[in-house]
Length: 468
Image (cartoon, rainbow, N blue to C red; front, side, top):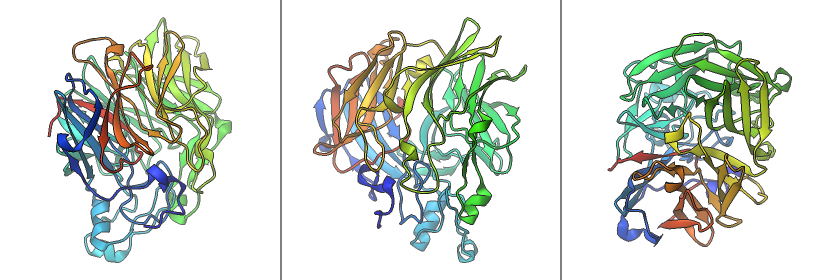
């Protein structure tokens, strides 16, 4: 593939072609892997299989899962493609057939006649990988999730026993309630402006749908739960399939409309609470909770929509900062304050504190200026009690991915867990970093070095007890 025209396919953003397995004897461990770890750290990401016709970060590329399995000090690495119908069709014809979200292509009639995937919108399955209700899912917010086996082999599209209907797109950013075990998710459709909260019980059975009407379909990437509410940001960011099919820029930012914050009752009763503020965009929440008649939200703030059809514009490098927003449920007043001046993304918490008052947030962070494409050379810890931000710096040229908090099964304390992420550092290569959540000064307690390269990716999760 000739990737020279694509800024976000350079360096460690470039794809890898091979699927690999490395056992304990093939992985060099620096430090000591905590023996309490039994399960798997998995991360999804975009990985082009064929020469792209167009590439808009972070929306394009076929899904590939990278996993590190743990069993009482023993480790095993594996990576696998998510075998989507779009990927299988392109393999069958040996070439790129489908376009990007920013520039769609009509599917050739010969492909349709031969039984290939007819939908021009590629289900990339590249955004998140989640384990809930005994189901391992590769997720992309523009379509159905893909069900995987524990060994990362693909079973196929998953519709939650018929809950999802043709045209429904399940978010790649659900939240799991630590008390009920419920998965709080949502569906949007390409042909409707409305937003539908979808709630599934701890066994992945559908509980309820809560509709939210909008006059126009917005780009809503994430949601946040608190004890009684589901909160979404409705920013003035829009996408047009019609423009994408015509080759025009389909992404629109209309700042004059402002951003609405909508708090939806989790039980499906009562009216939504709507708050209005000046325009901003956000990909990711960190956490949220209720306190004294107010909703507190920690999230990554961006001034405006951070992508466009044109490549190399630099809009994706605009500042991203951790913010704290407070919503007064009685007065509808909004307070929005910057918490840290560190460039950050992919914010996470100890999932046992999801929707509850908590102390630590973690995020991929950067303390250097980047050239052609932005990246994150640090793992950041954001202390919402002390106001302190601490960084572990892997080096100025390193790429550090989304940090996932892995609880210590012997402790309820956030600081007794570990923070994991994949890192690529020139000179060191690829490794999985394990840092003590309570001690960022000493750096990783273990680095698991992986032969070959693990490209930059998107979202990751810890699958407690999962083995292949």
